[in-house]
Length: 212
Image (tube, rainbow, N blue to C red; front, side, top):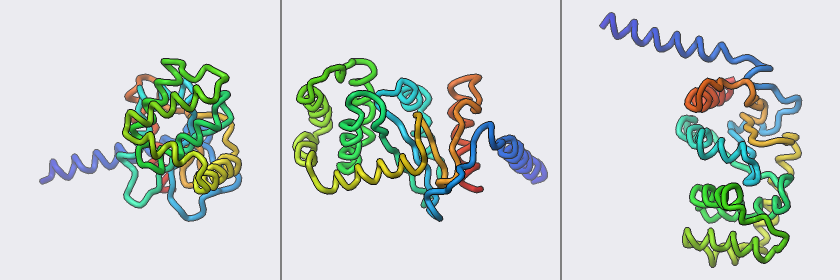
């Protein structure tokens, strides 16, 4: 029993050391104007045109790890920015449709591959771009729903909300993660000794900030 008590105390102390080692200006920064109010939320901004976002999602799997560890009741949102690439706005619309159809987790890796690896969106032809995206939705069995959602009022409204959120948080680079509308994680301050260490500390910083 005594050994178990010492073990639990050791775990507690290890967490305290880890948490208190996070410093404003290094692993995170405070926003001058909080955005979300009282809602606990983790907001991630990314772009399918962003190579670092591709690594962040596929290799480091930070987004997936965050979903696993945040407490129940914490809102998690992923926003696609439109300021990167010639088809940034089209991909933002595509992402919103995928979320509304509840196939975002299936669509995300396919779109990343199409943009980053297969280079299928390196064209000025809008019809060709829509055809590529349509094929991706067909792979997850949602082609008809994708076509129907193209000009919906809800889509236009959601697109405007997403644009406003990016403006409020002054997002100018990706990947970017904001916690509770008060803090922005500084990727350059996270442990880079290994992929596993980076992902682990990133998630720990998110958990730490949720409790601030």
